[in-house]
Length: 394
Image (cartoon, rainbow, N blue to C red; front, side, top):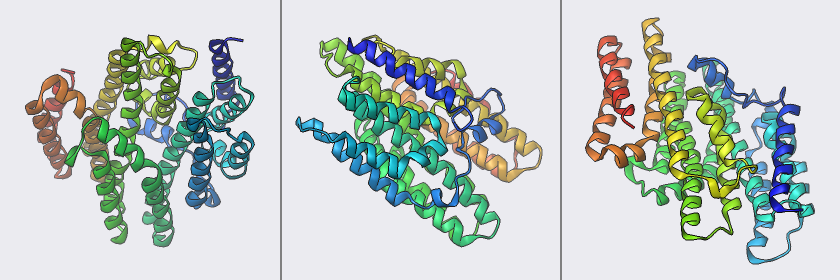
């Protein structure tokens, strides 16, 4: 049987898995345009207490799986039973609880890699990246629970959950962000690693002060900086594929496609809230059913930009509505979230519009957030219009 046929089998398994996991999956595509409801839909469902507090053992299982799988990089034999045992004993129940589609995909990749029906390095990347996508969803759930605990005066519970977030950041998210910082030459205020660490520090200060409002605002800095690293990771594999095709190096196209696919899964549901058609097209492009040699980096980047612009615009609208209703705390959260989506497009803004326009955009974003925080609706509206006008030039 040809390898392309086998990838269709795998893709069909994933499709079946998405149907089977319908009730348990939490990455259901948003069907409404209301941003606040979208954000709720993309959150994983509330984890059980025993799930929420075991990041260390789960990360160890993940790193042990990864170490076993990476034997293939040195042409050593992989013990697939070890990989399967680690997954089923330490991760499967939790992954399935958070996102049934992720679990179906990981199980299919282990099975396909072990049987030889799926190219082993493709299987390795699917397992790795879908597990990372799971950890991202867990992080979102823990953040939400910690915020609720602060509001309920359950300081110890909030601190325990936030400690799990920090552990995941140190061991999973920051290593991924470091690679993308290096690839896209992002440093200082542009660095995703720096922004993740800054967000965590600000959240920790808010937690120490039992300040639920600030915790919710600064959560957006942490979460959306991680989100940006996943988006740029996926986007970068489209760039690598296009370059490889251009140079005639086609041996690893399916492997890079699997990596781009895996990172996309973490944020796909959220992206659909900005532009559902763009998110679905991205999913189709990176699907293993698609011939990787046809992946166009410019097209992929354009689709990501379209969806992220839509997210930013939605939060501008939500912030204005919250401010108008008198809910300043919510308006500040929505404004910070909108600003973080704008910041995700920094590479595109600099490349397409130049450094000066990029600086103008981020200065306006700061002024907009300050106007929202100061309840200056008219001033905020002016800044918002200017920001969205710049984004629409992309």
